[in-house]
Image (cartoon, rainbow, N blue to C red; front, side, top):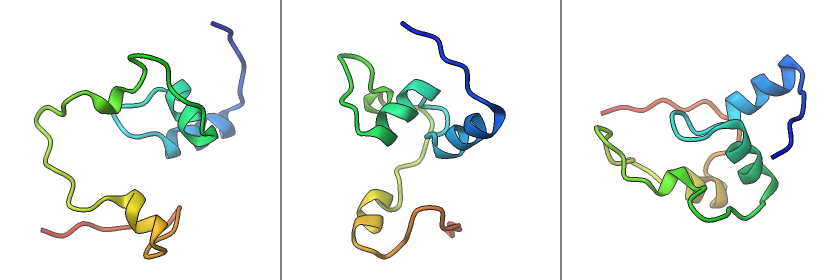
Length: 77
């Protein structure tokens, strides 16, 4: 595995794009760059413990043009 240095602004961008509690910077970059994952690298396939089922599939909403990347959303019960 190689090591690269990135500045604070780039790291903050990656943190903003990461799936919280699931992705590390490497997985975030793989997802953003469209690089296929190797075996056992997709942490999102692990079962969620103590979390509610998602109310909506955000990827589908973006694809349908109903929301856009960077838009702020609020969830209501």
